[in-house]
Length: 565
Figure (tube, rainbow, N blue to C red):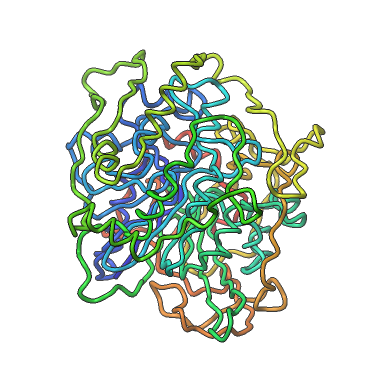
């Protein structure tokens, strides 16, 4: 089946679906599934925008509300994970996943589902060592700190995913697994994103928790976003026993902007005879049931049970009996019910309410799933704890100021030095920097551009300040990954591939000198145009949609340091 993969959505659903439609018409293909790798921004109304970690002046309704209200319906089944710019109050209603609109499914804090027999998993949020061991304690109205900590991943969710034993086909995270940049064209990555050099050279770029999951799950495909750059890599895992070593094809894509590599189609082998509907995964649901008692909505640190003599149980993997119990709970029907319903009023363009306060409610989908499987709605638990302890809500003045977040605490990774330095780091990135990128004048990068598409020339802009991490704040231990498959890091691991697909699972490794990211033969990605003609731009025919963004003026000044020619 044809799977469209998209990087950071940033609420631009209309543009993404338009681009898919254009690609389908141009290439004569039919996209079966869209996967979005975070920063989805499922904003339903003005109140939701106040629960999104962006400065006030950059809050825009975008187009998700049209799909939430029923004005439009997603033309292709869409599955997404959360990133670090989300309407967190909305997503917290669905801790185990659920429909945010008809045909648009959120995977929850962590989740695994099946579509056409393909197992698709994901982990929402980004890694921050000082919040990693805490529970999901946040509840709206958020404080300046909890507005940010709410999207930080937790070790309880990673622990659940590490109970998976059966093969995973596709896995998604918003930030990259730490160390994955060594398995693609690292030199080209650093030409495009010069400010990443310090973290790449020190081995601190990316999420150590995601690297841990990559080593455990070893999926066929791993998709990410967050760094606003297209990057492909091919990682061969260590062989287990007498089995052939598994290979993971990694792909990260850009944000949805004109002339950017934000969309690619991957051909994934489905299972003939499998259901055409989105389905629950019995192994995952059995793990949710087994680990339900471990969940605590507390900001206190929690360590997962281990085989160290201190715990009566440390293995929460799903037995065949547990999976059969799940099947019995669901009456033998794994199809995810299409039970979406509005939980708050949708935005009405004819009657804007800029002073509306966020509305918080439980979600019937979560209530139904919890009742069916005997799970705990951790959003309700967090609400009860919040009511007992009390909290201070966010004011707009606080939101637009600097916030250092929680005090860093040592992580479970033994070499974490996140609390050891307070010196100024010019590459450190804050929420505010991410949306107010300064233009790096006089810097132009004309080498290293991939040959996958003809990109119209554009303004050479700034480096993307789009990560909520830094070496000083989270020098978490770099996991030791297997050595790269090709010797020089600039060499490509794979050359001969079909268009519209990443390397097939059985592809062999070879050395080459491709200038393309990671050496992968890329899909022919349609380039959105901003509606403006720049010198040297490729001419556009009538078949190419001329897309002009409502907030184009915001973005034209923040192009990456990359060649547009």
